Length: 633
Image (cartoon, rainbow, N blue to C red):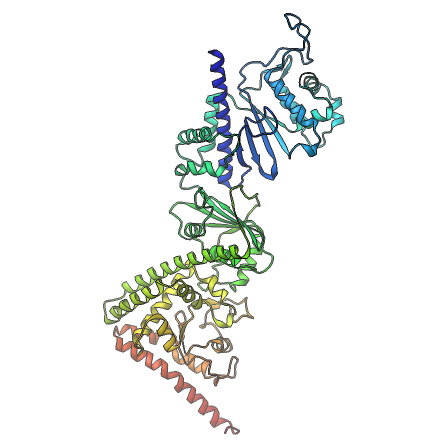
């Protein structure tokens, strides 16, 4: 009975130690500094050193021998002797459990390095180090010897000549444990570590202490981890920290961070890992990542991590999608990147130093340097062009959906705050129609958001795509409200979104700030209002819509037509170029005065005047040129 009790206590102690190691592995995983990737038992290829097997990073495996030894192992001499009495008189004395375990290590270290099946560490886990291995040799002595010969500069020659306690350890290992060479003993001791864990009460306390920072109700969490290990003990399968974290997810403290990490091995091979989407089998599913980073729960801390450097421009759709994801994370979300300066430079260059909302928005973003850590064992690999592009597409679809949702909310709020009038009533009806049309077509949502956030003189459509997100919702909303006003004032019979834009040839450029045409990047300024005549002319010369809406510009109609459209000598395309806009609508005083009338008739009059004034100014200017030019026809 006493023997059975001791066996049960030993078994329970094994699970307590395994629970502590599993908890530490989970905490490291949650911190993003994972060292132990898998936890197993009875899976090692070294007999007796497989009570717990920790599969670590860089293919290093730690084999643990757990001994619930409360008293001395032996009082025999370090030199193995023979029995002096009884029927086995003259035979070698019996090995202790510890002797037997180290005897198995002697067989392992007798093999050539090439036959040892990878890098291995060995750990002896015991309650108390102040117990004897042999007479005048304690676990404390063994630990001190391991520490001494693990130091940099230690070598076999020094080990072979060292006095006590190293000499006593050599004697014990060679006499009792069958080590046949100093080199094998030296390698064994350098690979050995000793952990003193105390009794069961102390182990429980250490588990709770490890959990308290990350989890509420740490004692309940400790029991759940232990029960999970017991239920899933297997000599064939191993458990990952993510699996355990999934079981205790409901206990995570809300203020603790969660993260998503993208690491690009090359443009066709990516690794995705993290804790942002929970700890289930769908590792960092794109839709969940976008939701958490763009609309985080109150009080939660989220991080987006990039484990690769950017030394050039983006070379794949996924790189662009992740850039957009990072540009529009919520203010509470931190972004970490390997080689963060390169990231900052590349992103700024790609979006031309602004998202269009302000002149300092990029510098205000929380982007910090990230110290590289290995990718966790639980990660998702993305390989091949189709899968990489598919990941990019899923991210973009969700980002577009969230952006559009916020835009519709903002437009609805702006409309509802307007004073009761026939204008507001008409705008509401039309807005519902536009919403239904645009909600049903994700491609239309993407085109709308993208096209409003770039000027054609800036270059690529990619700029508008990257700028579209939560940080530019207000710009889009302002543009849509102005377009709604113009639509109800127009004579177009079919005012659906697509037909209105096509029939009148309307385009809105919603930018508030920009850096000018694509050859300029440094001079951030208010869009259009702060541009000089040549810069305006170059911008307008690239636009092909007949009616150009600039919701953030404040310049008056007369100023625009008098100084820009009628002047073809200061840059840009010729005034005779049919591509140039025939009308420009800004958030000018004239527009505000028309809104102040609170009547559709007032808006119609404003729009009619806007559409006519450009031709009048153009004709006047041409007549002036003709009169003053003696060579005119």
